[in-house]
View 1 (tube, rainbow, N blue to C red):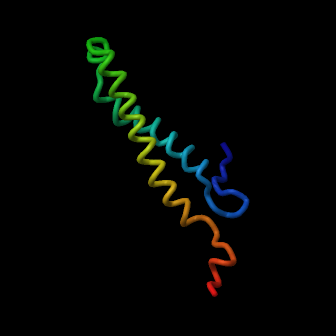
View 2 (view 1 turned 180 degrees about the vertical axis):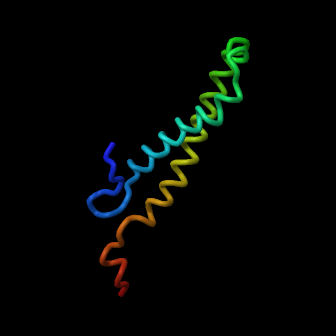
Length: 86
């Protein structure tokens, strides 16, 4: 991934938003979700663990993408026609 998250026009893109959402979800999975499950709990209820994992990852990616895509709008440069309304 490019260390400069801004595109050549100076604004972030929706691809940048989804990349960051996935990175944040991976971090949250290991720091928030996994500590709630011990090895014994995973072994005792593997189906519930898989269901909860899918639910957590799906909700986390979706929520973070919506928030970050809203921020993308504010980082994109304005078009000339938007700057000078007639």
